[in-house]
Length: 115
Image 1 (cartoon, rainbow, N blue to C red):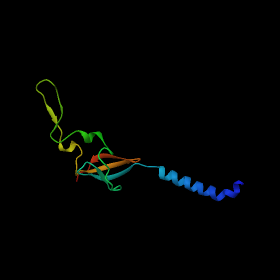
Image 2: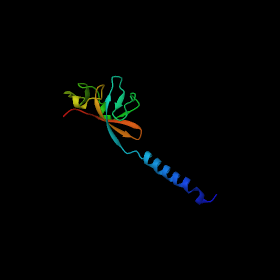
Image 3: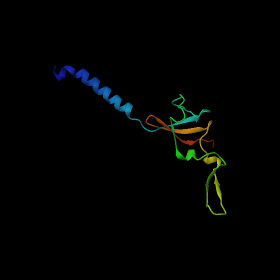
Image 4: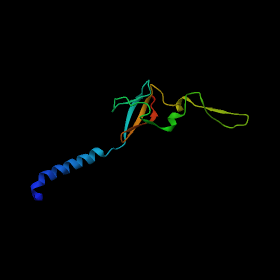
């Protein structure tokens, strides 16, 4: 077969190739979500529960509970404890969160609060 006889197949292959490249280009997408009672994450664009441990959380959202000790200023008296304030607490069930989709992984960036 000569190349000219396969021009239709060649055109179709080029179209499919371009569409696959377009689909595989995965730009960073921001989304809102909610942490459920069992720790799973449900986002607006992917409303299926992502189990706890199957999504990532930025480090600043893992500091601990409000009122717990974050650190101490010295080991010698007088010792001053730095307590975790409400605005720095870990993510918890019921929180509305900002999610970044990095390829196929959801990453919780921060907790969203009202203005």
